[in-house]
Length: 633
Image (tube, rainbow, N blue to C red):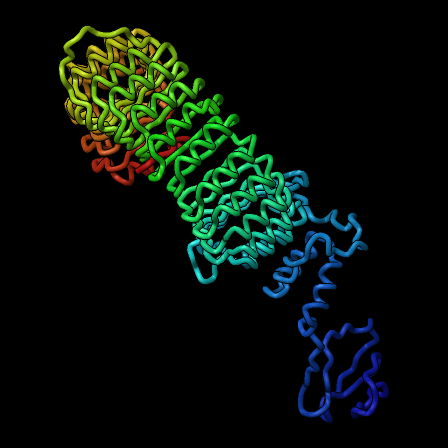
């Protein structure tokens, strides 16, 4: 025991001998490698005392900033960002120009893990969308730091909810610093984001092409001017319900953003004629314009008519201060030569006189949509149809001064290019017998949609059928007044063969009209919607199974069909149904399971909602067996 040494605490700790902790415990240590001791201990007294090391957290932010900017982008910075929110926010505030130049580009080789493609979603092609509570500064900072090594985000969409912890200017600053390749920015309901945040985006994201601001009350002209001065590549601008954006911001956009092609301004009370006119007269390549619920007058529409040489799509809505003169001047100014699509909603200035002027001045107009234009009557509609020689699509919604005579007159005078006619909730149309011979037919019409027009009945439908023998698509949703006798003449007059037929909520139709439909058009019919036709029974399904060769979409929701009808469908070898809707068919039960499984060989969508006779167990079995089919239950 000569090797034992009684260690009493005066000497240093030695390896290869023995030592004593305190005065009672002896221990022998054989020779070994030097121990790694990360923490300093004091072995005196009655126990261990740990000496606290100085922490890096005690360093001021300036020092941490200097350390972080020397780290290579990629894993190293992402790892540091996970330490604390303080480190995350510091890292997110480092601009690209502030990176230490001594950091070699070769250090970024390890940014991508072995299971990632280094070319995937790089150089600003990453896209992120933050909704509700997920939209916070911390999350934005994390995204900015995490995606920075790949060029940052290319598209960012933020849908806030006015939460106290929502996105602020600080979060947008992090994006501006870390995502210089950002091209698309959308801010909705971000009440805490103001001019400072948008200005940071403008300074850091010079490649910005699309900006969408909706319900951003803290953003004013200052932020928009910063965008105009720093983002020359802007091609699309959407501003909605931003109460502090006015004329100055739009004027700056018009002066500086020469590539602007799309602009939409809605419900901004400070935007007046000066802002709109300056923008439209300066943006020479502007092709799509949408102006809604603004305090503009006839002057702005006159500017559109004179300077809109490049405009192809124009949407005007809720312009209560624009009179008939404004729309008339816009039409006769002859500046809208390229206008192909025009949509006007709730504008009192649209009258018979101004509508005819638009038809004469917009010689290449192909699509026209009028909604809630209460001063347009039959005379104006017919005059417009005569003047608009290039018109291909005409849509009228809630134009209650237009009657059956106006519709017939428009069809017979529209020329040879009209392909689509849509009437929605036009209460002025009444089903009255025609007291004159049938005018010249409109052989070019291919699509007829008459929805929720309660006065449109069998007599009107028969007249339209004689006028338009080339119809292929028919939508008669909500026409409670039509019967089998009214629809049959239309079916018989369609020489080209019907492809899509929607008869939703036509309550008075029976199996007779479906038998005629399948007999006359079974070889061309691809879509048939009978939702809510309560008098349709299994007899119609038998006719469909026997005659329809190309049908791929069938909706018999809330019809009086049973398991027998489903069985008949499943036995039709020529049927190749991809979508089948049986919603609300209470007579279809669990007995239809084998028939649905047979149909499921081709089905991509199956709607079994509100089928009370089909149990949840049956639905689960169908989900397992029809794994390719999307089943709603």
